[in-house]
Structures are given as structure tokens and as C-alpha cells.
Length: 263
Image (tube, rainbow, N blue to C red):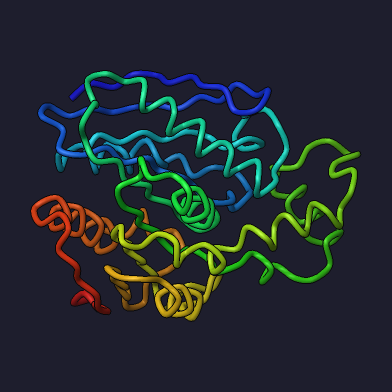
């Protein structure tokens, strides 16, 4: 297993991440994190580097990166900006010659899942999409754009006191990038939705709405008593790896259904 740093451009920004490539990689995953929880980091949490290593141990190359505005990355949060970042990361993966010919899967958590769906809807170099605790829309944050901006400023992904210059346009962009508006364009590529039924940040009904709107093939995995940060839940990681294994073993074979793993 090898790891290397990845640097790429997104708009005028330089973003950084890490790519972990196992021996004889079977597919490539691009991991898209969600809006940070805020507060001091947990020193025992390996973050997305740990998530990437877990997938690489199962034979999947995995790249993770920090979106604009997050964890020291330059820029300010906007939904269209995050979608541009996903596109830039995909382009960076495309330049890694040793990964040529391997299927690429977008794996997005929470708001990163929303960005993954939006980008994959129009990028057919993405072979499949999986989300963990993805919202059908971020409008659930509230309908007061100034209050939402302040909340994100408190979290630390908006830094410039003058940003956004036009809060209404910024809010419109957030609403327009709703996963519910794009999820039906993922088909006929496979879609996996994983969601905890005890998620108190993005409730389980978001997954049900996305599943109902999506085309075939699609799967919805319900994690009993699962919380929001599903990358930390072994059942969710197992469900993702199992789905990748099945999709690679039987490409083009459709399957649809809802699954609840055993507790």
C-alpha cells in the first residue's frame, strides 16, 4: 500500500489531499467529507485518512481532500464551490496513470454526498455513487440565510466578514444544488444510500426521499441506531465495501432494494 499527497486547482484555489493505493487496486474511490461539526478535533479520530486506509485495506484506492474553507484550506464555503472542488479532485485522479481503466466511485458524506450526487449527474467518468447520511437538501438548515451564514461562520468554513456579498444569491445556490434535484440523473449508474435511523443531524427521511426519486439500480441501507458520522460505524463501512465488491463483480446487473444490516 502506497500513499502520496495530491495537490490540485479548483477555481483560483489550491487544495490538498491524499491518495492511498493498495497493491492491485480494483477500483478508485473519491471521499467527499461533510460540513465539519466544529469544536476541537478528537485526537483519537483518524478522520478521512483513516476512512481511506480502511477502504484501501479492502482493495480500493481512496483519495480524500479538504474542501474549500475547511481545515485550513483556502476559500469560503458555497455549494457550487464544493461541487467545483469535487470536479477538480476527479480531474486530479484522472491524471494518475496507474489508475487508468479502473472504475471511479464518488463516496460522499452528508453535504459531501450532496455535492457528489450533483457532480456525478453530469460526469460520466463517475461509474457509481455512494452516500453516507446525505441530505436531500440543505434547505433544512433553515430559511434565514443570514442565520445559516452565521452558523457556518461559527463552524469555521466561512471566514471573510464580508462574505457572501449577496446572501440571497448564495442561499439560492445552496437550495438549487439540492441532491433531490439531481439524483434521478445518476441512473443507469449504481447508487448506494447509507443512513442511520438515529441520525439527529440529517434525519432518515432524507434518504427515503432520495431513494424514491432515484432511478435503477439503487440500494438503501438503513443502519439501526446509526448516528450521523457513518464513516466511524463499521456496519456502514462494511455495507459500502460489500456494495463496491458486488458492483465490480457484476457490472451492468441492476439491483434495487432496502437493506437493514443486523445489529
